[in-house]
Length: 217
Image (tube, rainbow, N blue to C red; front, side):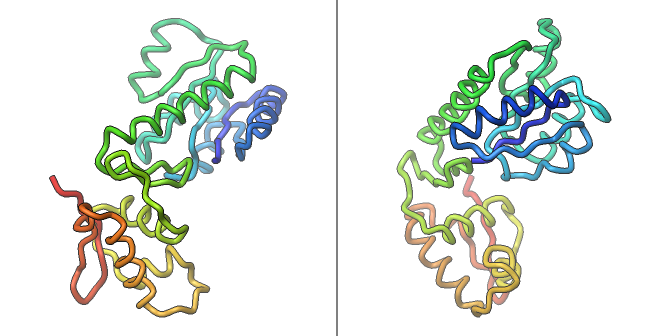
């Protein structure tokens, strides 16, 4: 599970990183707003820890950019504890708000709490993809997917309603250096549909071209 830690105070950043790594998280760092926006990619991180007072671009601007791309949980980290600031942060899409000075142990606890809430919500959704744990649930029941089946489903799911050619899928999921043929995609789609059960029709065949993921209303 990856954490993006955006904090300009190096000493604090290194301490928080150390505590998170002890808990098994992989931590990527950014020290200013521009670097944070460059490093953030949809579906790459389980949680983002974001300081408000940053060089280049402040945390509010970074949060806006993140929310344009993804719904990754964001914990705001700041020395400002006014209620108006907290409300503003939540309105922009923050999931939690921590006021400095704060113990690194508390930050770890808040990260775990957010991940736990995210996983618990899976039981309330027909299809839930837990990107942090690389797990998929259908009506609260975990699917037994291989690594490639998971990556294939995630790739389709994040491009809903877009027709994707077999070549696109093969190159993106298996990589350009993979030497298998296009039937690899068809075989994995077949297996994935079987495991999705009643949701099998979410994966549509685009005749003569490829596939697309389309959620029934």
